[in-house]
Image (cartoon, rainbow, N blue to C red; front, side, top):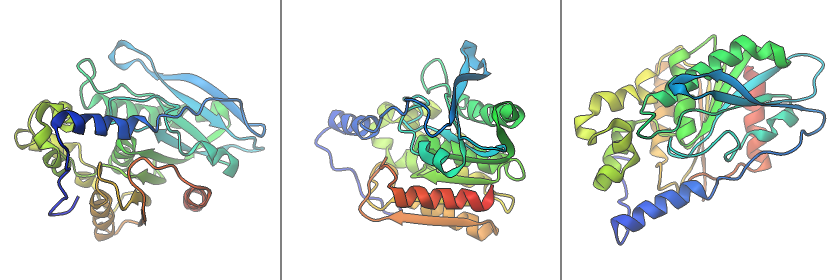
Length: 285
């Protein structure tokens, strides 16, 4: 989002909400299926019982003679929807020698308020770091990644934990400034997911919104970032990624920004883009 963001042109509030939901949910393809090329899949590995229910990771481990690096993945879905197999864009990183740990976190709602989603995201990384060796993983080489709301969570984890625990982060079309995003959707009032997230209008929740913004935690200690965003993303504007990239560079951290022409929100990675992600992690994990 820029200083003068394009307003959403919708005939009614209801149609706008439906459009937002469809943009998120149409990408909810599952990634379940048999193991590939000798890899091992460990599903439902519990890492936490926060909120009275067990949270878990699904772990995909490639065939390897030695422990392999791991990328922890957070799914998208407006913090409210999805599961570990939801649009798992980095599933094929196992073909490049990386394990993938896809995280189930508590979904935003009346029962699980923000920051429960962040608490689970941090706990999942701690669990993988402490237990990965049991599954053929070298968790001393650990990256994080996610798309949309999951990209927001991955960026927060990377920036709050920092090096040496987190070696690299790849985030796809992430919200990075929750104040700006909240103002963009303020006209939806209680129907805005940002209003729901902070339980009030953004102008009355500025402190909470800044505390939930990856931009707030940028420092020189940030791990290297690869940020990917479509130039036609109307849901999470590409300036959200540009802001993070510029802040990281200004702080003296490593950051690479790929603005993909012609792509909107929640686009799948093609083979070339997956190779780019694998190359990025390979050089840093």
